[in-house]
Length: 267
Image 1: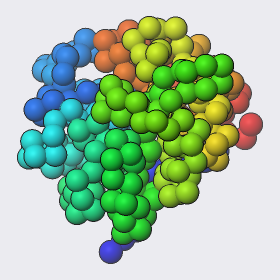
Image 2 (image 1 turned 180 degrees about the vertical axis):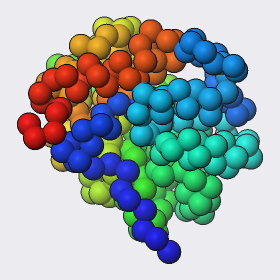
Image 3 (image 1 turned 180 degrees about the horizontal axis):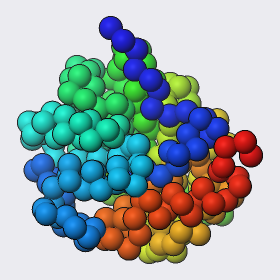
């Protein structure tokens, strides 16, 4: 069996791989139609992914809202995305994991990485067993956080609705112990605001874990993306509305970032 190439690598190895578009999925389609120009079906996940691939995106994060029992459509969807040439990173049911076999089945269906968050609180033993079976590089940790004070955040689960009782830093440390491929640090407070990422949060998660961090929550401008990579210690940036709504293309974002010498090969 061929060992898959790790989805997350260091900054020097992914100069053209900084931007990860996110698509929210329910019942096999996007939760809201996309406004990307030229789409025949604005709710078609594969067609939207193809538009991102045209901008040279290499990964897409599928945030699947359906339960594990309701994702019979997902293997076909993943095959379509792989045919486009994109590596799918997949979260199901707000990062739950019913069993080790569920993770294995999703990987076999075409997911490059399975994203886990709620499972780390509800059933950490299953997460540990899944990592032992399939390797930490096939798992991405997600920490949805709300600020509780200066330099302090609490991790939330179940789509950010329930406090976990754990700090973002302690959750990052737990993911680091499992040697997962990367951690997505999402600021619930900043979601949908367009005010920019919580750079202190991404720095805290990066410092606590020593792992690649994906900045998420609050992005509204191209400069916000640069700020996350430069000042937030993020290795990747997640984009959703700004590309889904057609405000910016993935190609435009990448060109903006790659124009900075910090992200050009040899610098």
